[in-house]
Image (tube, rainbow, N blue to C red; front, top):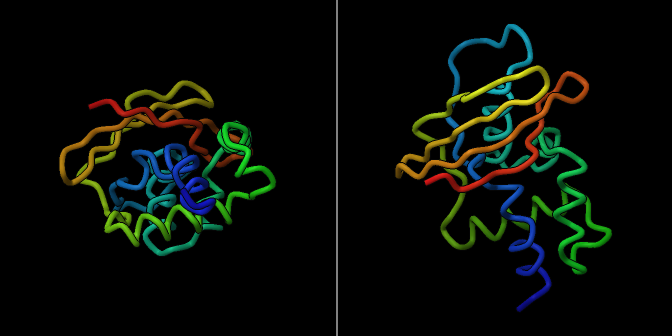
Length: 143
């Protein structure tokens, strides 16, 4: 297995989880909301903007993901996400808008979001508010 594929496979669960399928919003954000962050994250992924997407990934969660694989040591978010997006596109799994994004709960600086893909696959993500920006911490397949 190539290093590029290993890096992509190790980072993909956190970086692309259910969040790659987030829906879109037609309302203008009035204050930072987890829904708005999920939509912005998805838009960055769809537009092949890894730096923009990395703004919505929790640094500690990213470091924990990197620690799981020696091949990832020293890689930054933009490099990892670029690799994951390239692999996803090359395998016909490019980021697509979802059918639905629902905030299941929000309590202070933490939230739980369910994202349902156009194919009906649902995944749940945990987000936390850091410095006024909602960031994804983890994603779990909920189907």
